Length: 366
Image 1 (cartoon, one colour):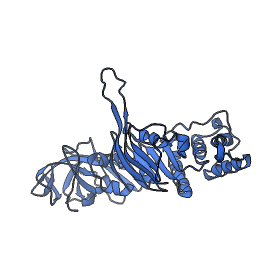
Image 2 (cartoon, helix red, strand yellow; image 1 turned 90 degrees about the vertical axis):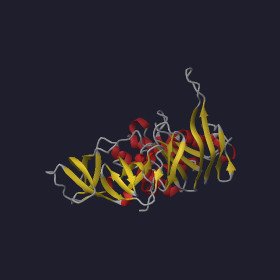
Image 3 (cartoon, rainbow, N blue to C red; image 1 turned 30 degrees about the vertical axis):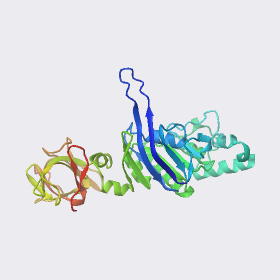
Image 4 (cartoon, helix red, strand yellow; image 1 turned 180 degrees about the vertical axis):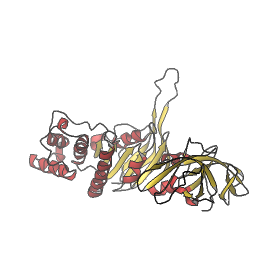
């Protein structure tokens, strides 16, 4: 099911007596979610991603704009008439019911032409449980399950009616790190199996990039950039997107362009043809540093952090806007820790220039 959001806006009236300015939670959201794809809404707390999800579900009414499922305008439809499955952060399971009863519950509330026989309901619930691999836990109650198992029950309950659209609101935030990894792989598998159009809300960029077909990066209710995760990572449109995506985060430094040449401090880093003389913000991805005794950029060595296959070199530079600079290099490359400074060459495709005023990308020939 294709989902189209047209100029979607949500404004909440101010509740602050001292400040009567309304809050624009989502501002002119214009986007098309392709049929059968998993889209990640990504951004910091308060960026409007959950508000967008709740407007798609029908739990919130837009202040303006329209929502289409296929060619049908569903903006005014109630949630139960939209055919959506919704999974909340806190699972919202009924504690007095078994796993099977929790999964069956949405089917038992169907009325009219949608009403099913008990045999059909049981069959559909068992199929949903099998899909999320909890078919051996049907007689247990939520209190007897782990957090990951409870999350699977919540997903099975959302899937049991075979919704047209599946909506996941921070579904992994209550799980530990190892379980998060396992569960997000399961979510991707389930989505690919069912081919249900899915919207996944998270503030964790690693989660969004690992399972999404498309990511939408939001800030203050406004879409900053959307596209395939790797493309957005490799080609950020502004400093906010560049800083939000990546672990470790991008290194940000002060620089200047003179005669189409980029300088950091007084070191000539590279030619940047097409860029006018100006001060700039420079972003360098951690994997963009190549240790080189004759390299262009000098950094004062702090320490090495061994991570197995990679090594994180921690250093400082007077031009850095972060306390430290982190560069990720292969563990086979040896860094001379007896020296005070480490020198780097910089990969052109891992260095980005941004306007110091608005943070927008300044492009140059790579």
